[in-house]
Amino acid sequence: MNSADVGALKSLLSSSQKIVIIPHKNPDGDAIGAALALNFYLKSTGHHTTVITPNDYPQFLKWMPGTGEVVNFEKENVEATKAIEEAAVIFTVDFNELGRIGPMQETVRSARATFVMVDHHQSPADYASIMYSDINMSSTCEMIFHMIVALGGLELITSDMADCLYAGIVTDTGSFKYASTTGKTHRVAATLIDKGAHSAEIHKNIFDTNTASRLHLLGCALKNMVILPEFSTAYISLSQEELDTHQFKKGDTEGFVNYGLTLEGIRFAVIFIENKEEGIIKISLRSEGDFSVNEFARKYFEGGGHTNAAGGKSNRNMKDTIHYFRSLLPEHKTALLG
Image (tube, rainbow, N blue to C red; front, side, top):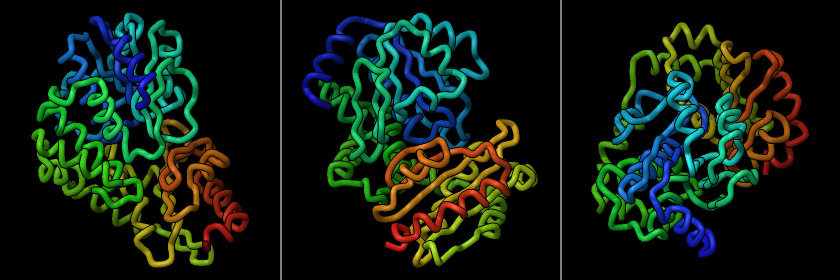
């Protein structure tokens, strides 16, 4: 965070304010962890804060400290709308374009608040007055840590805050295995453990807690995997019927897309998940090396993200979406084969 932004943020927060903190739709561990940790910090410095999620988030993240105070815009619309309308400051965390909060964006766009963006994805929009954007950071939670330190708040980091920040970092680094993990990331994680983060328990809650139905759904997904060695690509599809058969709950497919990349010779992995309620096919894309799934998702599937991890959507049905996807691969064959 540069000195000008630090100064502007210190000035903005110099007196008690009504503040709203918003993560993206379908928030993951990094988004929720960043929002909750920031919420704790701002409350400790005298502000009146509300965390508002566009919709619900997975049960396996609801162990996080502070989660009971979160307002769900879909289910608690009146309370959420009132907080947004009254806010003097709105922090948006782990996203950089208001379309990422779904229908909630209409209410947010009309807010009179000063916007602060904290995010590590590519191609940020320009809606925020203060924009802390760094695509080289492992996670938004790592950024929140650095922001708190820059504001002079290191000593205010509690065990609860450390748990939230550590959870977000391990989520977005895949337990520190992704290329975005740096020495600085490890030093931040070490500091958070020193501050009381329960690292072993956090890893278990996020990565090692399953239900029988989720494991059966994973088996279905792996059975559906199609491998295209001529394009160094593997993809998985899950229909709404398959999700329903296996009692799908929000978050159950987290990490499924990564299985394709465990195959020797595969550099590009994709999962297509039917969502009949929204009338779309949700798409997650992962890659290894310099093949940019961010560019691929932005160009073809109304999405984006990072070089090696991105998301998108299709308004076609599953069959047509996959046919379209496969038709794109020959154009990218040289890049995919390295």
